[in-house]
Image (cartoon, rainbow, N blue to C red; front, side, top):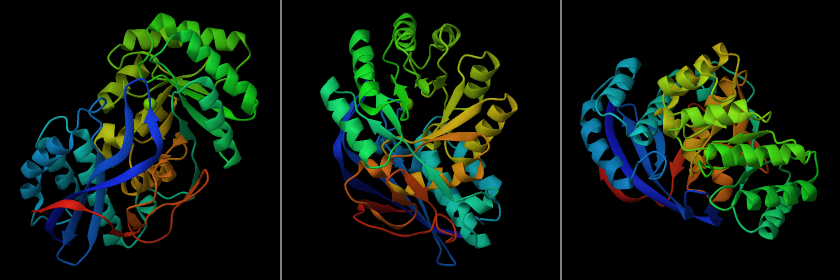
Length: 366
Ligand code: MG
């Protein structure tokens, strides 16, 4: 199976409601899509969003990096898989989202080559997951309304965006949500770096004192402030999750070794794809901690890949935050993951099980 052609294009899907965090407001998913074709007529699909404020990736910068990497992959054999991954990772530093899209397409092809769904290639498991759903940061009444709607749709875990306003407002809206949905809905707070370490401790201790049992608090402080993250972890009982603070295996090792967080959020767009996500998961397991699998504003292709990864590593990836396709109006793919309320299921079709992508624009070929 030789790599014959690499096509890159873009998909745009409007979001059902604007996505608002402490870092940004977004109204569309506008992602890069890769299709790697082989001499046997197989197609591997990959996807990457341009999450400028988190990964630094832009649609244009991903295309520029692809122009460097794509010619180095053409004509190569899928059986030389590790060498292909090395080319992806060693051709350029950073660019983790583009690397993820390339890896996803290559893993898709490799699983097709062996005639198995990707999760089986990665070690097997039960191809069914239950995800949370994101609630954007808004005034309390809107957030309560959004939470009640999500609970009515069957979600029993809500990822609530906070930060970027006064800490009192964060406490008040969380209390209002907790009172509205009750104690049986798991509440996950994501501050997206929106607090100082002391503010974070203030918010979390206030909620702990009020009897709100949060499942975890995600990335309370700036991505680079590992000492601040550890301060929050050391001064609260609520589990603390590192998201923007962990891209690479090296980042994860540092956070785990210094006990700066309790949980690691793996996103393929941060690790640069599946191979390093596996490394982070294994490392976390060795430190007796757990992971969440998350996504950026991604649609069906890369979230399908993340779901396959999570299924195969369910012993350590115990929290699922793969709501990207749920937030979009419509879908750009045929095949891939199936979503029914909070439930994600994967078919036993080879690879990612994606057979077509629709509405691709600005297509370029290598
Ligand atoms: Mg996050």
